[in-house]
Image 1: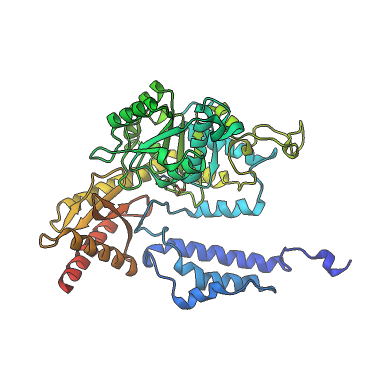
Image 2: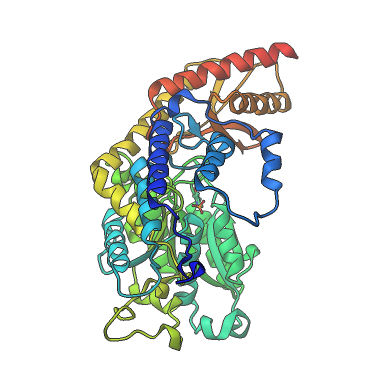
Amino acid sequence: MKKEEQESLDPQNWDEMRTLGYRMMDDAIDYLSSIRERPVWKETPDDIRVKFRENAPEGPQDAAEVYDEFKQDIMPYVMGNTHPRFWAWYMGNGTILGAMADFLTSVVTPNAGAGNHIGQFLEEQVISWMLEIVQYPKTGSGILVSGGSMANYVGITVARHVKAGYDVRAQGILEGGTQFTVYASTEVHSCNQKAVELLGIGAKYLRKIPTNEDYTIDIALLQEKITDDRKLGYVPLCIIGSAGTVNTGAVDDLEALSVISKKENMWFHVDGAIGAIAMLSPKVRPSLKGIELSDSVALDLHKWMHVPFEAGCVLVKSRSGHQDAFQLIPEYLQQNKKGLASGKDWFSNYGIQLSRRMRSLKVWMTLKEHGKAKLGRMISRNVDQANYLAEIVRSTSELELMASVGMDIVCFRYIDPSMDLDATNKLNQSILIQLHEKGWAVPSYTTLNGKYCIRVAIANHRSRLEDFAFLVEKVLEVGEELKSDK
Ligand SMILES: *Cc1c(COP(=O)(O)O)cnc(C)c1O
């Protein structure tokens, strides 16, 4: 046989690849087990950045060398969300078994969109576990997606399909001739607006209803707006409730939203990217009351469940509604009675993607390794830590708590009686940058009523109480220092 005929992308020497794989595993375990000793974040230096502007390589490079480049030029400058003092935006930390599951998924690299294979059954089981966790009936459906954005998009797509009153898939919005309206609070996550835009409804018809003082949607104003819109000839389609807003972790009154949606014959979708998985925590569960009354819910498993990115999930109570909104079977996707192309209910009938990664394995392994009780305990612990931090803030005269603690999110700022709003905002911005640049801690920020706040979102299974004491110590130290610089 000619040499080229035997060529493939497999290694020339499997044993060398095995050795490299062992080295990677050792490094990965060293990295995660010593994560606490490193800075949370480190800016990528210019001499490293330029390397990432080189042209695509024409020839081959030894795999071990490629790995060394990763170790030197990439690994030290990653985002930092595996660190115990990373509390920015809202993210999980991942786990080592989750990472291994990702690796194993790529080893077998099946397409979880179609076909009669174990990936289908694995995802069905994971979906059924999620239905159980949010207390949906087992007759519901769902699909794993990239994250909360896609989960909300799928949920709102089903809402549009089921509640349009005509075949919106066939006719489109224009021929249907109705202007739909969607409702959520002013605190709703921006991905929901993107969904409304992409569905052709138009951002201005996403009615952003003002909130109460605790940043939950004002129910009376919501009802009023729906009534007014109806009088004007609009067709109210869907209410989006937030189970944990991104700014402050506020949970809308989900029971009240359910009552309105039923009365108005509207779809009730819950953006539970932050809070829905907290149904695992006996401490948080009561505040999510009513989530089980929704028609669809978006969950983000790469947030508070710590599955490595990406892992989102959407659940829909009506399986047929979900399927009707997405199923489309051309000849090349016809299902056979037997063989690999058999089976029913391929996941491609429940979402936008055809080819899909088998995300179910890492979710399945994470739930098996830890069980629901421990995952719930990690969530409860973060809530306790948030309250602990809030308590320190309350008892420290240089600090001010800026909103009530929403689940695991604490917003506070450094204050000095001699400084006006503008100076206080600037000072807090500088404090945050110092925390990042020194690699001490990575909170993010938000602005509440014009006031710039340091925002600590504790979806972190590695954080300990001492980490919050350390944060406060550094904020006070930097605040004092910057103030006297002026
Ligand atoms: C993070 C988040 C989203 C978006 O989820 P992604 O996983 O980032 O796509 C949506 N809603 C809320 C409330 C979030 O916190």
